[in-house]
Figure 1 (cartoon, rainbow, N blue to C red):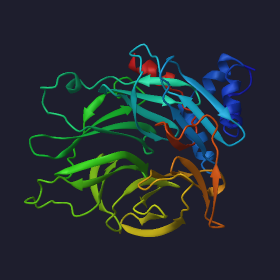
Figure 2 (figure 1 turned 180 degrees about the vertical axis):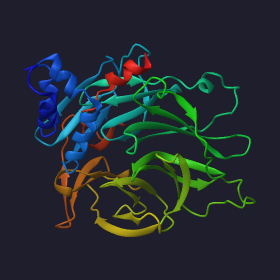
Figure 3 (figure 1 turned 90 degrees about the vertical axis):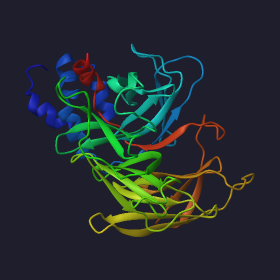
Figure 4 (figure 1 turned 30 degrees about the horizontal axis):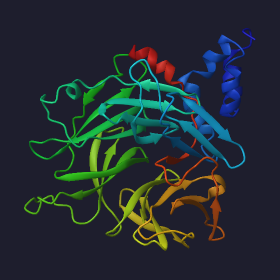
Length: 373
């Protein structure tokens, strides 16, 4: 097989599903090197862009630290156990920060300067080098209220981890960036040049869509004399390629809402009512034009209480929308305007398991580990 042209093998591998390719890594070192090539991972994801998403459950085991992964073939669900052991630390408690292109980003709960990437399909973990300021609380600039996001710069085929914080001196949002590049010199933390809007308080995890990260934001209570005061809901954006902040108004004021990646577009989910969900999608980014694309009527399950948790997870099989509601899962079919209940084995509605609509990636984090070592 080593005499077989590598370019032909590369083209064949582009047409195969990820599960098959991960098995074929065992054929020979020659095949493994081709399958682990980051270029194959990037091109493979583009070719399979229309592939259906599965549901990924990020579990919180309390005892044995390990990296485990299993697949439930019956319902299109994947489950990963994220109590991880690395040579840097044992993560018995972590905080899920976001995901992008099949990779999951999280931090250690007791020290958010420790940032990790996780590829569930490969069961690989990558620990990033800490930012120097994070180990010295009195250093300049002072950091507080840090938020993280993971995005992909398609112009350079690189992943960027963005850490956003508020400068205590002038209440301006600032950012630090870790570029996961193709050389050790590019894989390090650095400060972003651009500054963000003043007096913004970011809420929740960011959504990566259309080349940018987005956070929900409202004005802080002491901003009534500031000219940049935010009225109602706003969205703070960070362009991954340009590394610039921006500010977007939501289509209306929401009592309860969250952001969503809907087929690659930014969406706002209105959860103000426990009987109906509205999903607004940003269609024209230049003109900031919002369109109400979905209205989902809800019927509360037996035993549901008021103010129950409502969360739209995303698009999954056959274009249906997955909804987490009152400890249950609903699948909404836009074609029929119908809802059906889903059962996920091993899932308890009382736990804090993270649920994602996830499309796996072939990208090997071990390649980047070599850069950081």
